[in-house]
Structures are given as structure tokens and as C-alpha cells.
Image (cartoon, rainbow, N blue to C red; front, side, top):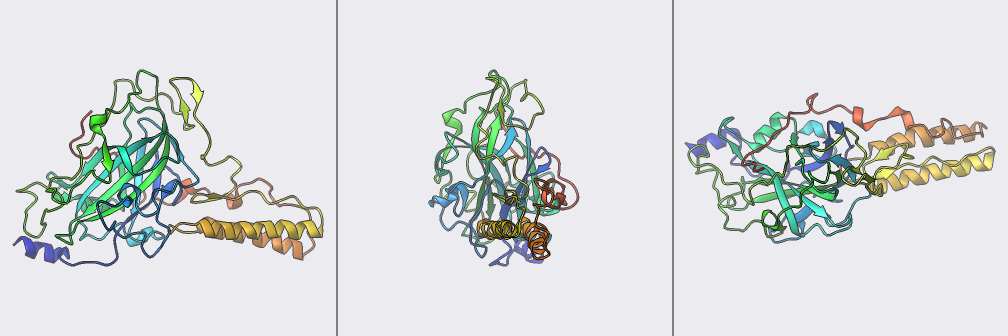
Length: 379
């Protein structure tokens, strides 16, 4: 009966595609932009593929996950984080994951000594996980699909200030006995509240990745085609969530990364610069050089097109929308002005190109889901 039910849902089939990848994060409801601050595999054909071995260093942050990206996103201790998953990295309309990929979703953090610190190794602690909801009678993948690929949770309010990796782990059981792990990381710079609210993370709450799961863990050997999750609840692999909080939450509503405990501003290195007039993932356009004659105009046009090339070369599989906009609205316009003898510029110097703001991009489903605390949260 269990197998028949799964077959009716298409869960007994295996799929070469329709996996998943983290493409976008929203911090306190604000879209940071597709690919921005995300460590994502560079191969568009494999970016949604599972990690091949639980002992691989790729288990920490996925393919190419030990290589930092240019930008780090600022957040506050206690901020809400919405994570957007896609089955196709550059197309949210095709859903977040195939319904067959039931299992668990976990979120981890790691406090870094520097933005370039290794992702793999010790120091990871889990802040969220969900598997099979007994109340909703639904797997986490089903809930993710219902929420248009969006999962919202919150950061602990008692985190030390500094650079962090936020790690998402989607575990799928449909290829039993082989378990699939889909892993990505986002770079965050978290500002804590006062010194009284900032707590160090106890070593007994942290794990090493790889190494946080074993091949014989019950959550990895769980046969969804024979076991009823209502009668035999699914044991989510890895540690229990640890969520350090105090009665005093992170101070202020300022989104700038500032250490309130010392009154000093955290490093701005790696944050999106204020001079950025158009962004695509972890690349920013710089204003083209001034020109007041024909030769200068064409030199400025050449600078613009070189930036287009750099943008596309740096674009992750989540896409190059910003690159195309820069090409169409800045480079084509400048080239046309040069050809027509309009040799004074650049036009709209320093302005955001085409007034495009990623924060105003449509949200899948129209709105962000509410905060989900998951299962087994320990504060």
C-alpha cells in the first residue's frame, strides 16, 4: 500500500534532472539578487546535481564551495533569512525541486575568522531542520514546493559579530538506498547586539563537515517505499538545531553591518559598493569614463563592452539579467551616441542603470512565507 501511494505521486521514479540549487537570499524581506553572496557551482549542467560522496569536501558548501565570491551580504543577529531554491538555476517558474525528492532540509552556520577561511572542517552548527511534518502530513520538499521554492527562518539573536557561511542542505531519499545531498552556502556579515547578547558557540554544539553524517545513519538508510513516516517518524540526520538567544534581541534596524557591542563598524570589505550602478550576482558595473570628443567617446564605449564581457564571464548559472541590461541600456546607448556625433557624456552619469532594483523583482508566488522554526529547536 505504501509503494502504491508513492507510485501514484511519482515518488518511485528516478530523475536525472529536477534537482535543486540555492540561488537567492532575502534578508529581512529584501531581495539580495540572484546569485549574490551565493557560493554556487559554475557548471550550469551540474549546478543542481547532488554531491557524490558524504566524505567529499564539497559536502561543506557544494561544488566550488570553498572558493569565496566577491560579495558578502550584511545581516543582523535575529534577522529573517528567506532562501530561494530552483530546479533550474536561471528559471524560478520551473519549480524548486521535483516532488519525488522527499527527505529533509537543514540550515547551518559557521563563524569564520576571515571571509577566505575554509568552508570544510569544524565549526558548523545547525539552526534549522525539517523532515516529515506530522501535523501537516507533508515532507519538507512538499512544503517547499507549496511555498514556491521559498523557506524563511531566522538567525539566532545571540550570535557573535563577524563573517559567516550560511549552509543549506537538502537531502533526498527517492533513490534508495542511495541518499542525495544538495548543498550550497551564502556569505553573510552578521552584526550582533550588545556584548551581553553576543555568545560564543559551544564546541559541543558544533560539527565538522564533511563528517556530520555517517553512511549508516538511520536518516540515510530510511526506505520511503516501505516505511510510513506517520507510524515511524523520519530521523533527520546530523545534530539537533542549536539556536542561541537571550531576552535582549539584536539592537537597531540599521542594515549596515555594525558591531553594536563595541560601537565600531564592521569591515565594509566585500559588501556591495555604493558606486555600483548595476549588479549581476557578484559583479558590479562601474560608471564608464567621461568623454567630450569622438575618440574619448569610442574609448568609453569600449570600456562599457569590456565590462559586459566581464559580467558574463563572472555570471553564475542563476543568470546574466544584469549583464544584458548593462549591454542594452548603457553600451548600446553609448555606442549609438558615438556614431551619431553626440560626444559628451556619459549620459545619466552615476545613475542606477534603467532604475533597475533587484529588491523590486517579483517574488515567486507573490509573497515571502512566514518564519518557519522547523523541528527540535533548542535555545
